[in-house]
Image (cartoon, rainbow, N blue to C red; front, top):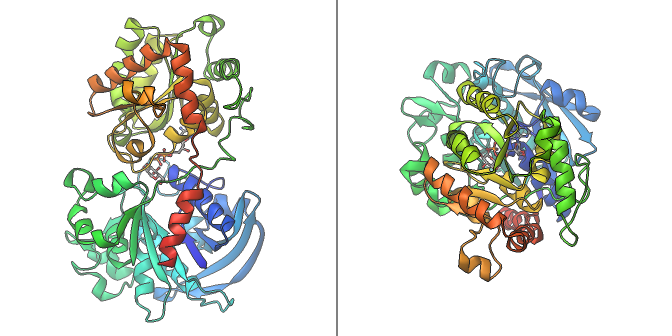
Length: 483
Ligand code: ADP
Ligand code: GLC
């Protein structure tokens, strides 16, 4: 089985969120079950600088007389060869993959990712005559939405699978841009990529792929409803026969409290975890600027890591922090970056409640690992969450998650109801409404159980014992490829 896996980011080379984690760990798991994977990525500056053993495979011709240089590279953390689409005027720049330094989408994103897709399609069809053509092409999110469509132009072609990691993100452009990109005229139609008089890269992927998956069974249901579908619900309803949900796995090697190089103390489910967690907590709080007297205070520490945007419900959490720290002994450690207003609110909370609220605004892989290990519980009040990885990292690190009943959160976290506690299935706390009150009730329930160490340890260890690795999910992808 030969699979060309195309993604616009991949950990550890370049990552903005969970897509980068999945583009690393899913291909890795597929290789582990015998799939021959090529990982196609854009030639961003960071990738060109970090890829090793680079060699030129050739040039592919693109529309409008463009040529893309294709390189093959390797990276010690990535098990499949990287096929890098080198288009320096589009990808060799500083800034983030999709946005400039000010957080605005790159104005030439349509060209960047249309040409990336066109080059990937040529590679899948062995345009470079490398004696490797794909049986299946696996595309991910809007950045690769045109890839199944380019392949559909060929009678003899690999089958295509399109995975939605987040339906709220898309790249849409007008007819002038469509013409300038030399796209096939029939793509501008309501049965294809045309969407309210714009061209939608996401819709293009949905309508032109053979199969669609999303990253949890619950989200596969949700996106067929207007509330979660971001305008695509009816399209997905029409395509329901080819849509399914496969829960993401996590990379058990990168996220392992027994060997994680970012931790100051290691632990595992078979031993006592309390003292190691305390050591990690102190290291975390120190790194977040805590003074000695703050380390001496012994209230439960509630953590959060994530993009500070509407999706994540971080505003709900920030809104209840004042009440929580004045009416209980809870403390908060929050890592993230995003909307300036939310960042500002977080800074103000840290200033107002010294020793009780800690933050890091920015991106830090090390702190994210330390937080998973050092906190007592983890809050993830997402309004929607296609899968979510952090709740699974939390479970593995013995840090019970408090999550909203949506998407992949609902599929991975089992509420600490009396019944679930009694039968040993509970691993966290689940609440229903995307409101501050509902979140607060769940946090209070968690704090109450935390005061019963035996019960709490049982809950934490249930999460640690579960296997959230890729084995099952990779097998489900392979079954779809075979189909
Ligand atoms: P999403 O992809 O929607 O952002 P996920 O939970 O799937 O959400 O994945 C987020 C990933 O990005 C996790 O690996 C998480 O640890 C990481 N992450 C998010 N924000 C930060 C940050 N500020 N610092 C470090 N890691 C972060
Ligand atoms: C998206 C989603 C997140 C998911 C990740 C990886 O960024 O927001 O829920 O875990 O993709 O699939």
